[in-house]
Length: 294
Image (cartoon, rainbow, N blue to C red; front, top):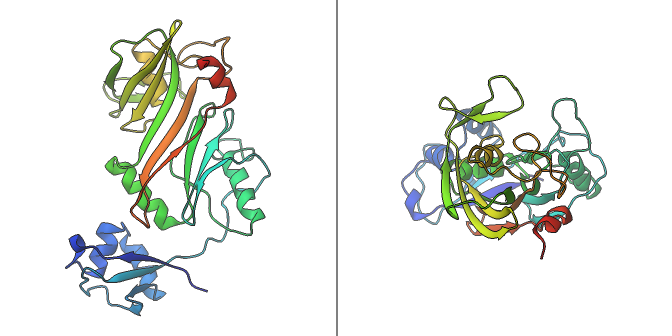
C-alpha cells in the first residue's frame, strides 16, 4: 500500500505552482520531482496534478513517501533510550563512550546499529538518518528522521537557525562575564588531523553561553549553538582559557570524570507535519551528575 505525506496549503503559498511549492517549500530537487512524476506520486486534493497547476489556500498536496529498503547499517542489539518518537522522528539519549554512526574502522557498537535493531524488532524498516552528530564522549539528544523528506525539512530548519541545540557542560575556572557569545572561526589544526583550532581562515562558529552555577574552581554552563562546527564547544571553551573538565584533547584529564563533561541537554524544532514546536530534554548521565553534585 502506498504511503503519502500530506501538506495543507497555507495562504502565504497561494499562487505558487505545484513545482514551485515542491522546490521552494519542501526543498525537493528537480531530479526528485521527476521521479515522483513518473510514479504519479504527486496528488492535489487526492487527484493527479500537472506541475504547473497553481495552488491556493485550503488545497492539500499529497507526496508519495517511498519505503526504505534497508537500515544502512547492521542491526545490533544494544541500549536505546527513547526520549521522543512519532511516525516521522525519533530522538535518543546517547550514552557517553559511543559513536552516533559507524565511522573509520568502527562498523558496529554505535547508536545507529542499536537503533536499527530497535526498529527491526518491531518489524519496521527505516534507513538510519541522524540529523546531527555528537562526539564519542558527549552524551545526550540525537535526532533521527524516519524518511528522506523529514530529513530534508529538518536540515532546512538547521540552516535557518530554527533547529536549536542546548548543551550543559562543566568548565575549568569561574568564567566572566557570566553570559556572552563566542564568535571565533574554527578550522582544521595545521598538524594534528583529528583536532580543530581557532584561526582566521576557518569557518564562522558562534556559541552562546550562560553560567548556571559556580562550583569550586569550575563553572556549570548552558550553551546554545548557532553554528555546528566539529568540536565547536570544546574548541571555543579552550580558546578562552576555560577548557571542559575531562577533555584530554583540548584540556587535560580530570579525576572527577573519565570523559569531557559535555551533555546535549535538549533539542527544539518545528514538527515538519504539524508545525508544532517540539522540545525534547535528555536527563544527565550519572558521571556528570556526580561532577555537578546536588
